[in-house]
Amino acid sequence: MKNGYMVLDPIETIPGDLQNHFAEDVRKGLSAESKSLPSKYIYDDAGSSLFCRIMDLPEYYLTDCETEILRDNAGCIANAIGNGGLNLVELGAGDGKKTKIILDGLLEKYDEVTYVPIDISEGAIHLLLAELESEYPQLKVKGLVTDYFAGLRWLADSDMSRNVVLFLGSNIGNFTPKERTMFLKSLHASMNTGDYLFTGFDMVKDIDILERAYNDAEGITARFNMNILERINRELEGNFDTGLFSYKSHWHPGEGAIKSYLVSRIKQEVYIGALSMTCNFEAGEAVHTESSYKFTETQILSLAESTGFTVENVLYDSRRYFADCMCTA
Image (tube, rainbow, N blue to C red; front, side, top):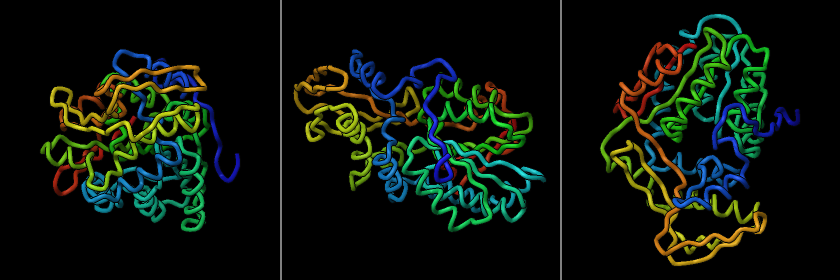
C-alpha cells in the first residue's frame, strides 16, 4: 500500500480476451482480419484526463443526466441501503465527482464508511485520493489500481462484510452482450448476499443526440480514441502517425450501439518495436476502438435477472435519457 492505494497486476479471474495484457491484446487485435483494440487501454493517465474533459462537454449529456439522478436521490439511496457500517466499492472511479454526491448522502447517515475506488489509471487514483483526504478527512479510503476483474477478485477475497458496489456512467455499455453477462455474473459471485449494486445505463434515444455525444465539436472524443495509438507508441515502441488516421463514430441500429473506429487515411505500414511486428493498413481500413451499447428498461431488467441480481429500483433523469439501476445480490 502506498499513498493510500495498492497496485494490483491484472489477473485472469474469468476466461476471455479482456484479461490479456496490453502487448498481447495489441498483437492479437492488429493481426486480426477486422482490426480492433480493447477500449480499456485508452484509459491510461492521458486517456483518463481526456475523458474528464469529455464529461464536461455540452454534447455529452450522460454526465449531467446521471448527476441529476444522484442529486435528486442521494438521500433515498442512503436510506434504502439500511443501517450499519458499509464499504463503498467503485469500479472505474475516475475523478469521483459523481461519487462525492453519494458519499455526502452516506456520511450524513452512517459513521463508518470505507470507500474503495478501483481504476486502471494510477494517476487518476492518486489525484482522487488527494482530493478526498482534503474534502473528507473522516473517510477511510483504500484505493486499488487495476482492471475490473482483478478488482472483483480482490473484493471476493477481502473480509468486507457489507458492500455497495458502484459502476457508474455508461461503463456497462462498453461490454458486448456476452461480456457484460460474464462480467455481472463474476461480480455477483464476488459479492455477499444483501450487497448492493448501483449501475448506470445510457438509454436508447434519438439517434442525432446519441451521435453528437460521440462526435463533439472540439474533437476531444477523437483525441481520446487516438490515445490508444499514442499509448502503443509510448509503451510498445510503435511509430503510428495519428495524423494519418481519422476518427469515425456512428450508430449501429442492429446492435443497439454507438461504435467508434480509427480509419487509415492511406495505405501504410506501422512498426511496433516491442512486438517486432509490422502492421499493414489499406486506405480506408478501420480499427475498432470502442462500442457504447444503449438500453431499454426491458433489457436492463432482463440483464439483472439473468445474472442473479434483484432489481430494487430504476431511477431516471427528468428526460429519461439515462437510468441508474439499484440491485441486490
